[in-house]
Amino acid sequence: MEMTAKTIGAVPDGLAAHLNPDNIPGLVVTNNRLLAGNLVLLLAFICALAYGIAVTVMAKNNEKLIYVKLAPDGTWFIDTRFAHKDETDFFPATIDHMLSNYVTRRFREDPATVRNDYGFALVLMDQALARHFKSPSGFDAAGRAARIRACSGCDTREVEVRNIYHFDMDRLAGGNPDDASYRTNVYINEILRSAADHSVLETRRTIVTLRWRLTPRAALSRDRNVLMANPIGLKIIEEKVLNDPA
Image (cartoon, rainbow, N blue to C red; front, top):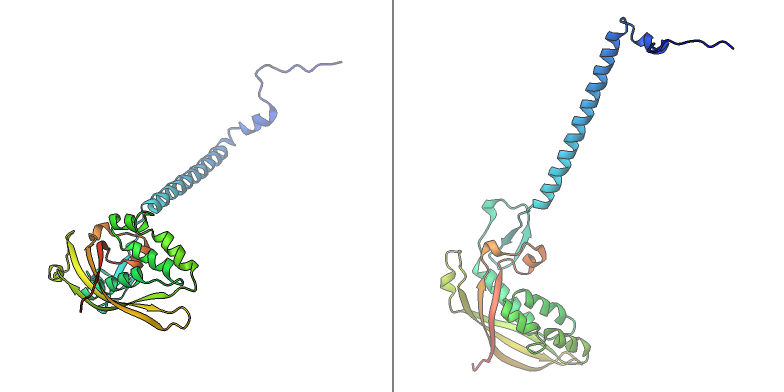
């Protein structure tokens, strides 16, 4: 058997062809192209990563302005597209509208609406009054609503607002109210109707005396549902029901 001796350190034939001086310029060009391509891919990856991080940060910090458009007739709606020139502080009619809604839904007793009525009233209550309204040892709103809903054959109580009188309405002039409280008398008719034929059984004239305040604009809720129910942050602090002697 013959053994072919190879010189230690000899360059293989295939590699030797590549190391041919005539091939070196082509190899350099190829390597440069590969390097440039890798750099482009790396740059694209870095840009994509930076964009992803930026989008995540923007999503976390995004704050959409919600504008509450108040109409002179006391109604309102909300949007995100109003220009600054369209913003309105508030109208006295808006306050009247909200106080009227509050008293109507707070004191109405109807199995079909009591759950939503008490929920609406709760949104307009200040913290201390809300605690008393919900507490089992206070008004017990949940328990009372359950009893009213369970009694489909019971008489219902409607509320009709007759008049609204503000003790301190002059302090609201100028459209920039502070944290001071205001007092209002809401004159109502409480109408008891028969569950059998919806006829009027009794009408009682009462006065609901309210003490309320307006939440500073910076502290208004950004929850769209809350703004729909309470766009100016009106909060009822105290309420009393009195017989109307008139």
